[in-house]
Length: 594
Image 1 (spheres, rainbow, N blue to C red):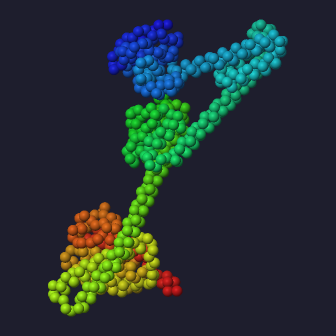
Image 2 (image 1 turned 180 degrees about the vertical axis):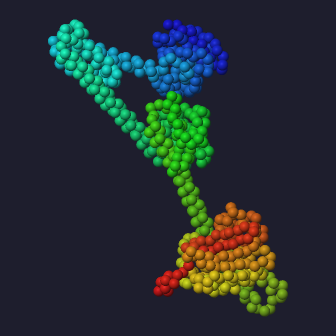
Image 3 (image 1 turned 180 degrees about the horizontal axis):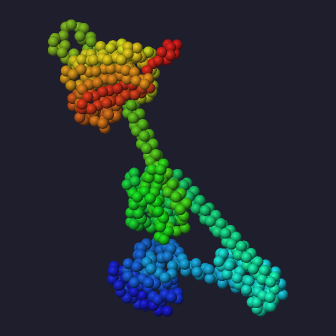
């Protein structure tokens, strides 16, 4: 039949030439989209489109979905199942999927109706043929019934339960007409024949139902096996991702490749990045972001879109939107779990790689500094020995003595710096061997304060020892270097004429040695950084000179003694460095002496 079709693009409705269109009964024409008739030649329509477009009156009744020509063949096959029509323009590189908003008959319903009619028709025709042949060969009612039952079972296995039901009704009618007296009539005189016919129909229905269930189970088993194989291939591919490239685009491409979907959009919240593959639209990407923000998964079976929140350890880390047919909730959930695990694995590998790189860099820097310190140590020793010999000559002029004293002072500072570097290199490489002995805190701290009082820049040191019997097990020399560094550091940044407070107390089995000064407060963000090697706070480094090594050595010394070090600071109370060391019990001291 000839049907006039209107075409619309960009909101302009025009009329093109009449196009041959085969329509099912009940369809009265339709409207399609075109570019104002600008395309040469006639559009080619699928025969089913006439039914699909029934009732479309305005452009708002159509859901226009642009798709590339390369994806056209695949979507052409899917369109009949998905309820979408497709128009091919011979001289255009774009295919447009049209989905009617209102239609008297859907493609899936039409397909089911055709399949039901064809299956029932074939089964009924087979029953009629077999019944007639059985009648011609003079079969009796039971024999013909078994043959017809076989036809019904075959129909159920190949088509379905309802098709088999129709064939069984035709079989009962044939048995009644050809084999139940009186023949050539649908009237049954003998009650036994009624029982036989009813029993045949009940058995046919039961067997058809069981056969249909078996067929469905086989189909589901096959689909499950195929999905399992796809997920297995996807998981294998994810395990061998290229670590030199971002994981997100690779994962999206692998999902589209192995699962065979139309498109996928993945949103990674940690990087605020969107990754897509296949025929993914801007709408799908926005949907992925919305899914993550709402923290809610959703399935839209009409448009074949599956939305899932990506979770790792119950925490949302992103979202995924999958477009495609032939999926189910179990497969989509499995894909989402694989993607979440892949993202977390990629982040873990990246962190591990960064940590390994940092470790190697730090190890290289430590080796270089260790070598430089050793190289400086010998010349500095010679310089200090020479200056000491010059002082002993007693024949130098005042100006010469002043210059030699200046050389000796700075050489001593360089010697202390190289000693710190060597000590740090040993601590970091764990090559140092601690010489454990009992260290009684009270006398030990007093001795350290007396030794470094000249380096405290005239600041008074106030001691507060909770218990004179407090003791620890450790290397006396390393602990002395640590406390000296904390005292000198406090003196550098302490306000003029203000004292430095040193205290020691026992708290939960640990000896806490605190060194307090009322200097400037340390920002919260810098309270861990100040223990890094060579770090100096931008806000206080102008107040005193230094190398940024001492606190790093002090913290590593504490860690080598199974202790720790931290700082408390505020503008109101000043700054307090705390050294925590395990307390030495008397039983431990007895074991140590033994």
